[in-house]
Each structure stands twice: as structure tokens, then as C-alpha cells.
Length: 179
Image 1: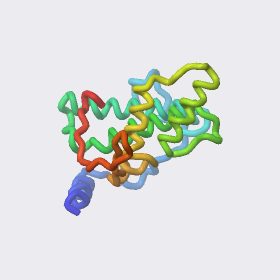
Image 2 (image 1 turned 90 degrees about the horizontal axis):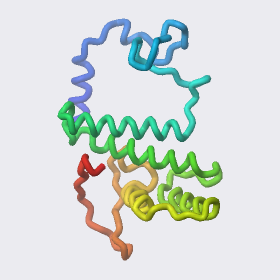
Image 3 (image 1 turned 120 degrees about the vertical axis):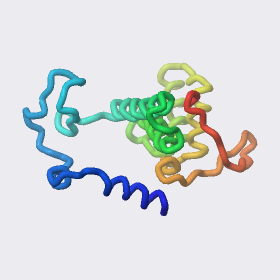
């Protein structure tokens, strides 16, 4: 509860203008938002229409956002502990989406183990190659803790298992540099 009160306190203490409180988040896309390049203003982005994202481009967006969070922490612009679950969620979701982008729609699910197994099978059948073991291991490591894309979103972690399918008492450290 302390965190909720703190978050609302920060929100309520922010200098919101009447315009900021009443202006819609999603506005009609007009020429007013045109700019010379990605670094000039106004800062924002378009969604829908011709800017409809596909699964692979969304995967890249989540991966880029995760990298930016980790870099901000490593550069001491933000502490590491308040961004841990957010970074893990963004990385895990990026992995899920890139696997989904590669697979036919009928094979898509939130189950990272299933997606990984389907991807490995597809690569073997289609290209006669093996997915590197470390990639499969990493996907299944994420899946052991967050099998259905809810753990890092809601802090409800599954119990990881060892090589012999025995539960591992769970408390873990995640190195930002390794992540």
C-alpha cells in the first residue's frame, strides 16, 4: 500500500495544467505533428493506419525499451531495483513476439516453452538446422519463471524447476549487465 500511496503522491504532486488533464491521449493525426527527422519535435509517435505495427516490429520496440531501461540504470540515471520487473517483462515479451513473428498463426500462444519448441521444430523442418542450444535454454529459463507472460507483469512468479523436474526454492538475483 505504501507504494500505491507514493505513486499517487508523485502523480498528484506533479504540476498538471488544465490542458494536460483534459487533452485526449489519442489525437487525430494531422500535419501539425510532421517533423524533419526522428530527433526533431514534436516528440511523439503515430499508431494505427499506415503505422500499424507488425509482430516483429513490436518485438523490436519492446527489446529497445528494455535496453534503454537497463542502460539508464547502468548510467546511474535511474536505480536498478524499481525497473527490474519492467525490464524483464519487456525482454520476455520481446522474445515471445519475435517467436510469434516467425511462426504460423496457428502456433501462436503466450506459452514461451511451446513457442520455443514450435520454433525449434520449424527451423529443423524448414531449414534443416538446429537452433543454438543456448537460445533454447534462455527461452526455457524465462518460461520456467514466466510461462504465460504474467509473472513480470504482476509479480506472480512460477516455481522454477531443476534438470530433474524438481522445484527450486525461488529467490534469485538478475545481473543487469548479463540481462
